[in-house]
Length: 353
Image (cartoon, rainbow, N blue to C red; front, side, top):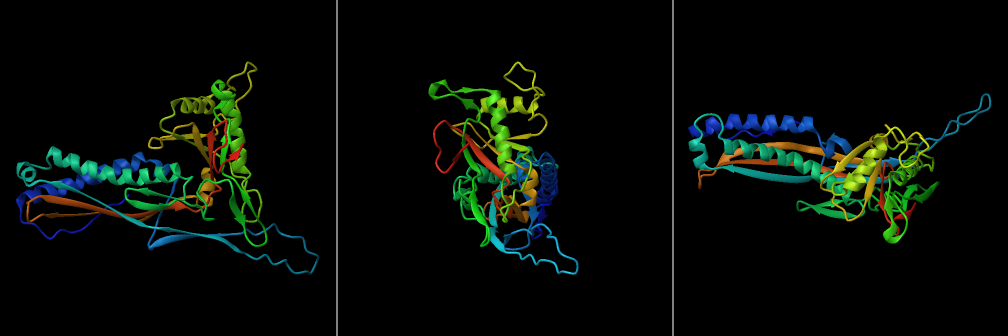
């Protein structure tokens, strides 16, 4: 991702001259490393550039199938109806770091170790902000809004409901209905009360059912979309659930029986663990990456990339580096993803599997 540098006012301090170019090189190098490494934003969101105050995602019903016509007859006219509209507004984020006058004076050549560390951490903080806001949005998708780093986020789907809800709307005036992308039931465990036991067999069966729910999501015409789920997203503090998911998705044979059955889930899934998603129960997100792309599901709009400026504070003699960026995060659909909670008892606003 590119970085923009604002021109400084031309300092005469020799220490500034020794530090400015090396610090820029450190920032560029760290930016390249972070871009290559990737993260939640790159793996789970559609990253697009923006040139406006915000971006609007408009939903429409689809054309139906072609209709048969008699010889010499005209074609049946198919009309398009707008069914939803979602606006994602960009938010400004800023951060500064300071290199003290003493650090500048003691930097005999290139960039001092402390200054290098601050420049590296400054750059990492920018990418960390991008990835963590995306994590936050998905992890809190049962809410209508949230607050991240003092920024108020809209966590609703285009129908105005939270991203995960049991009564999402689809369709327009001619065809409409509701459908769920929020479920509870035996996901990792089965049984009752204290006798509930986790097993790979339970998860394998539940995963197949959840994949079918993604496939059977309806479009704005009420037709089945037919997307294939291929991504499992797990919390960062549930090692048992993580181990079971990896066993099921990575084993050629079915687990938990002696019949040498094949594992129908083998090779079908990518597993992503969100370290900052900390939960008190076992749960997971299931997503279709194709649906996420085609339906504009998880969206990250980059309005202003990291823009860096620097100056010397006349009162302290310190060298100040400032970073500013603007981007928007939101959801243009709910049909690409679902949330499932392992629970014997009912979960508010969720549908029983």
